Length: 527
Image 1 (cartoon, helix red, strand yellow):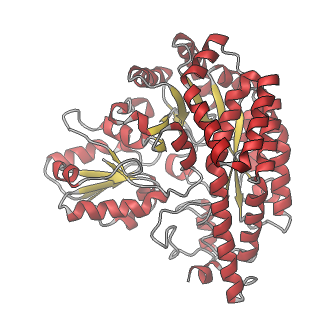
Image 2: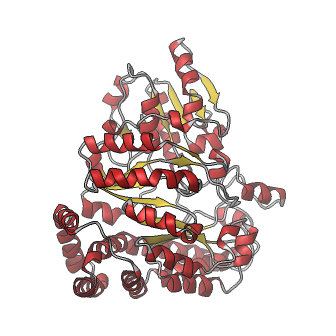
Image 3: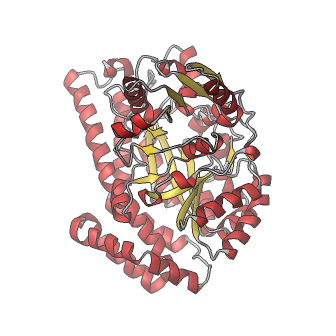
């Protein structure tokens, strides 16, 4: 199994954080180790993650079959892996979200295993055993029974390579956001594992000696509120029985803020942060893109309710919607500041394959199928590779607005100002002094590395971090750890934001040099 590379220059790569934590990459390849658990036990499996280690000729020589695949941002390296395998005369099978969405791109693979593996893997195995060395196997949509999904092969991971390990409770999301491909891949009726399944997965991870951050990778953990409310008391009991070995994070829709019972249960289970797709404060854009669950509410007030429950919010925002006006910078920055969201993922709108957005743009004659996500041979990132369609506003104006948001939001004074407000708003953790001291002792070396790195090498952060630490020690000692987590985010995202700023400035300079800043379309820019 070969897990392809992502772009090292990405919001999610967290380069500085990995260095501080002694890790090689943020997240482990959960999809691949889940697939490994679905394969026959008699098969000998090796996993090579090209984000953390090199693929050697000896490993290819050893293998009878290469399995690879992944997400859109891994497309370029997935195709490279297929080339490498075929050059070594090894049959190669490809699968995952991007091959499922765009199988034509992966025609060079010997096998295509498309859709959710639980529904189709037995057919692939049977074909291999009878001697087939080519084939396409496509699962029926949204029919995989996740209650039959096995415990992922955590044993295949080199756990120390990663900042956190993922688990999955549910697949699918009930909402209709037109730019999102989750409902196209997994459907709008979230399917969930049983509490017993999830606890067995946590038991397996715990037995391997892993302690620390576990991410529930669900695209919307609360998509099936009834099921998650039934599960959380079991998770709380498990955490208590094991003395809270795991700090938990996840992704959820903003309507989480409406459910005080759910917020309380998540906090008691030791969730410390949640990623929320806010996208934009522009209600017209939210309506156009069918993200109506974020309308008719105050976004800052909703975020503060999550803070009141003791969890901090990472916010997702997008620039490039059709309804945007020249007020987009002011409105988005004001929303982020008022909501006090320190960590924001800011991206340019990208029309993903097989989404409602792509179908609408194609019908309007605005979609450009020939503009690759990775036109220059590097794994793409939506912070830079968006707008793969003809925009209604001039492209340069959108890029300029995006530049304005990134510049203001990741200014160190603004970022740490929001961190201070969050520290004042968050309800401290109430898990007992013994656990707090244990966790501090376990991570004391990380704390020293953070402070050394900031003090010696990051002068733009030094004053902010030391004053933040002093404020926490004096007034909110239980939140020192949270303050350090947000500091680590900036160790990565501060330099990344400056990289994005320089890249966008370069694109705008090219427009100016061509004298086309007010009229250039996406096709012109690509050419």
